[in-house]
Length: 127
Ligand SMILES: [Zn+2]
Image: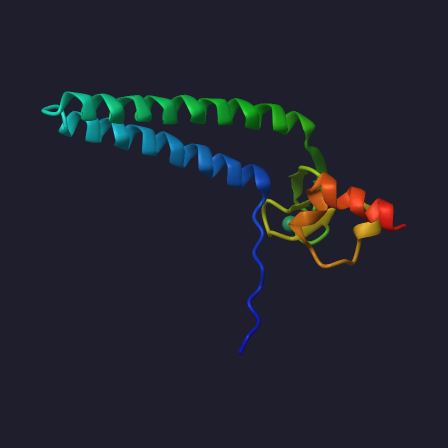
């Protein structure tokens, strides 16, 4: 049995697709609202939910904008394309190669937990 390879997609790409899904969900909710126009309160609920989803996705897009400012551009050692890194560990946008900014983490198996502040603090305490 072949070992399943962990495919880690770049965080920014992940957040971006999440925002896109939210836009569609919002439009869909409003559409359902229109279909339910006979039941006024139900239509209202779907409409409000739809508007909220769209507004929230705008917030997420703005958030991606600020996140992009904090990313570090690096050249991926695997595919040699420029990619953006967010946080201590991230994956290459092109080839999903795990990348790390921290020398201590080099060679370790890639894990999302290295990005958590609490985990790093615990590591510090054990030293
Ligand atoms: Zn790459």
